[in-house]
Image 1 (cartoon, rainbow, N blue to C red):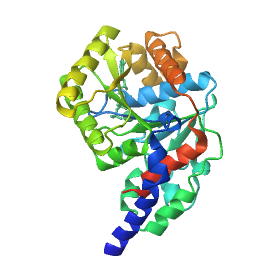
Image 2 (cartoon, protein in one colour):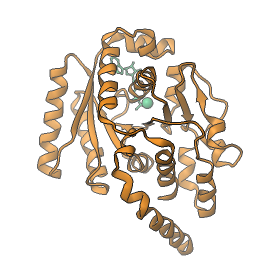
Image 3 (spheres, protein in one colour):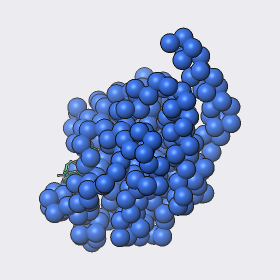
Length: 293
Ligand SMILES: Nc1ncnc2c1ncn2[C@@H]1O[C@H](COP(=O)(O)OP(=O)(O)OP(=O)(O)O)[C@@H](O)[C@H]1O
Ligand SMILES: [Mg+2]
């Protein structure tokens, strides 16, 4: 056990060098974890439809379904992946074998089965071997990571390994206080983390801006920093309908008010990211996720 801990420290030491230092470089800002304190606030819909919008703009987008609960993305997209991260962990497949390619070019890494097993992977050699299976063959401009809600260690590890975090909240007080708790934990570990807020299910943008200001007032007071405003998603029945039809709303209703909000957020990402994530950044993400536990 002590030997094991020493080995993990040794690997962490490797990461604390080059990978850790360069981690806040612009290129990592395209490795985006989308999380929330409270569940059911719209993360999976946002990740999926944002993925569609960025793909439409000619970007190579990969979605990592890292929600260790239900594989919601499969439901929204109406897909049934044959393999998942568990097959990579067991050594049967490499990452390229499990990726699902959508007709529009979007790629999905089905990770909801497997993420939890990572915590039990206590053999360093196994982890190192796993890392070798994570070299993506195809180019990636954006890696969008859909996480579970809450402050479980698995979620926090994914956020810490990502280059930036988008926190999703609704206007409900419980959703907002849970978002605060999540942000607090993340900032405690990475005080300079790039974090932005997305407010979902609002009636108009003003409501989202007010929520952002409200949260920032608390953050400034207790954590001495604030977070950016990323965007808002209007309440729109088209979302529920699309989930029922297992088709992303951005594809089903491209001119809906919800799709317009997604367009605005995609444009924001396209505007403020300088470089593409690049496959080495994605590799670093997996390396951090799988090695530092
Ligand atoms: N802007 C919106 N307008 C109307 N309905 C919405 C909106 N956003 C989300 N919903 C509804 O909320 C449901 C939950 O959304 P989603 O599955 O994306 O949340 P989640 O945060 O990923 O949930 P979980 O924490 O369980 O993974 C959707 O199926 C949809 O019915
Ligand atoms: Mg979800």
